[in-house]
Length: 348
Image 1 (cartoon, rainbow, N blue to C red):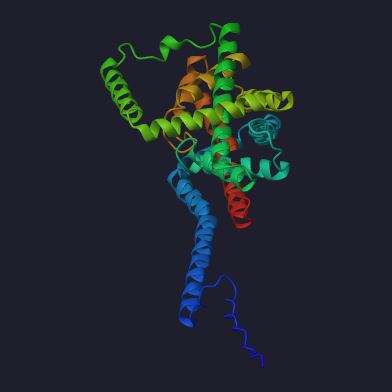
Image 2: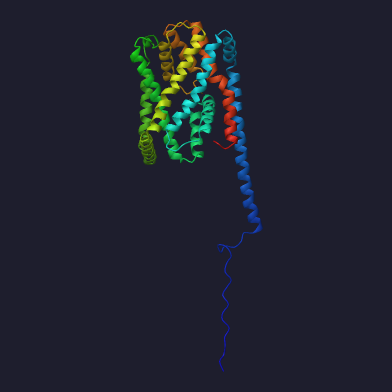
């Protein structure tokens, strides 16, 4: 008689990944952490939506005398010239968007890009020079799908093109009109060489110390490789190169045109070419001054430059105040509202 043995019963297979299911307390803890993270993100976004408006209020209160003076002077100017100046001011944001698009290979959403430049202008006037606009555009490109390294490379290419365009335009005007601006009258008789030498030595020591750190050298070398690769790729496409350099030249040219039109509105008896040289020289000179949007420094430099090219001091002051009113103060509140809306809509 054959004895039949029962086959061994295999152990039950684990469900899922084989790990023990989390207890109810652990699941509640995970859910609480996720909820806390979501609440923190929402709170940060709400703060970022309100922060630009608060900064506008603070700047407006601190500069209330300038605003009141500018609004009072507007009534004494000739309106057709001011309307034309306002129209040119509106064209500066598409010009900036054109340059931003030329700095990347991917096609960025056009309307959002222009809106971002409008908002970046407001951020740039609320934070130290360049930081506000750079942060807004860096975030926008990241949201559009570019990596942080490529976004930073595109930002560096934009800043380089904008600087080269402004300085190149100034150099071309100085070649064409060498006597437009007497630089000797703008410089002190005895330049303070001591502080300049000390600042240069400190800068050299800082750069040398950073270069001695291997990690810093690695990061800088990687960034330079990415930036050079992006620059080669952009210039390999004629449409992108034209957008980059065309916008870099158009932006300062449009701003110069705004100043010329405002000067005509007040009857400032200075040739347009001389006004252009004065404006470009003043903005290049204050580019390294770390004030929000150049507020204060640009006004002072522009008044000095306009007087140097032959303008009367009182009229030059009125021109500068109204010029800054059109290009800075009037767009500041709607730009801040746009910035808050873009943050709320997660565009940036």
